[in-house]
Image (cartoon, rainbow, N blue to C red; front, side):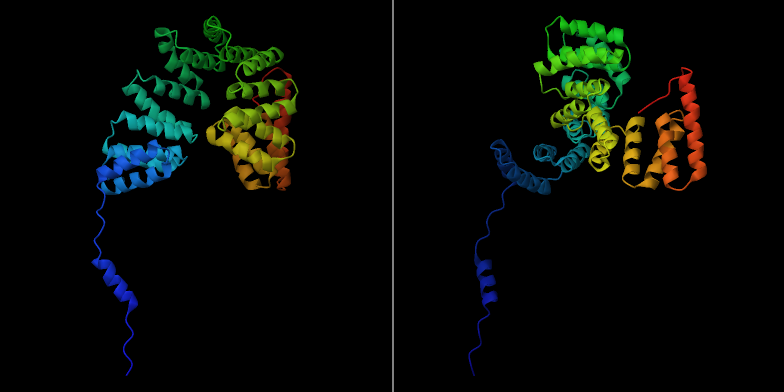
Length: 374
């Protein structure tokens, strides 16, 4: 008989078991190593080590917060938000974590959620200027100009030398239609020097008055002084549209979005321009982003429905237009779009009804009654 062949796998396994096991690092040492990795710029290693700490110590607020910060550094906002929420479950009154959570929502472009966190933080810590500035910016991005005015007016009165507050308040007042009050704030800023921000505010006031040629010159000056202000490029694009320079407007909107992909007006108007040029597929991502930023705004809802109609999503477009018609019965362009859409869907009675509504609204406008437009 031949000798039995040795079981090599079993032998290797027994040999491995005989070796001394490496000592597992303590959570404290892992945390120190993670912090060191983050500080030297090795973010991936820091995340891996912080995750190990969290597994060993799930109630560690510091580890979860630092893990969230590292995840934000890599743009992994959803994972960071999970960590911040877990930390807040364990310490609901931790204002540092709440600010970090608000910043993660803000960087993700979820301004409604960021504002909700910042409102809580501002109530509990009204002296925190970072939270104040971020909350005011969220309100402006969401078109909640009256909320921004209410937030900033008492702070402006108590501290008129805070230029950040002055600029945000002036912007909110002008957008809210309180031009005279906005000009008072502009004058205060202008007295402190000829800055890009002051010219942007002045250009916005001129735009609100309908003086588009002067506004274009003022905004161009603001851009020349500081070409890195996305709001200046966005508003400059809108003035160029009113001055019938669509190619220039398109370039201005693209520049605004390079600086700030979440600029609502730039997304909305660039999408609208591309749609009007017969490029609905190119328009779609810009219109979709505008709608995500302000889902209740009639103009973003209109543009989204129009792109859906242009890309063959007829039933989706129909539902969206019909809801918009119920919410804004005098919105002329909605009736125009619905008349064409119903015709494409072979719904002749509905199309005729919308054509009659268009004629009625045109007659109303001819007699001097304004109708809303996107």
